[in-house]
Amino acid sequence: MADDTAELRDLSHHLAVAIGRVNRRMRGAGAQALGHGHLSVLGTLATSAPLRLGDLAQREVVSAPSMTRTVTDLEKRGLVRRLSDPEDGRSVLVELTEKGEETVFGARSERAELLAAMIRQLAETEIATLTAALPALERMASPPGGTG
Image 1 (spheres, rainbow, N blue to C red):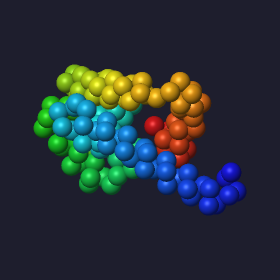
Image 2: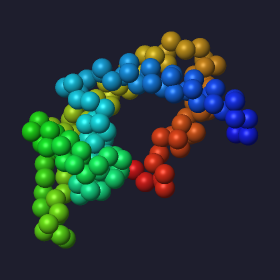
Image 3: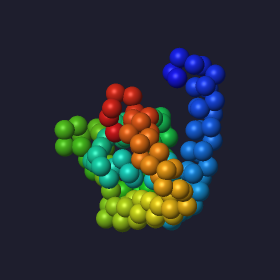
Image 4: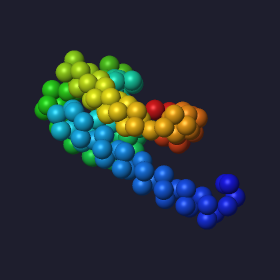
């Protein structure tokens, strides 16, 4: 199928629309009205903290100034804290606070439960299809180079 451009374009279009709609339904679930970008940063920090601001920006594929604004907002909410980098006094490390951990894991649980409710509405064959597609979807969701 990868050689059939029209089929691939059609699949890409339908998959983008479906993923977008599912994501919009899940966005409203929990996490103190935090946006997707904020939750993504918290999720990255939950698995990889502490991180330098630049490294965090790179993993989230945003500019350094954008990441600084996001971290400042998360810090004001008490969800992350900045630490001095023991290896480089000019750099700052960012890590989750306890409240940040509770927030990200709570949001993940709420979103997973919402997604589970959506999946329960599917036929068994559709659930099996999703299960079979999961490894490919996970590879698509991983950043190039396999980090993150």
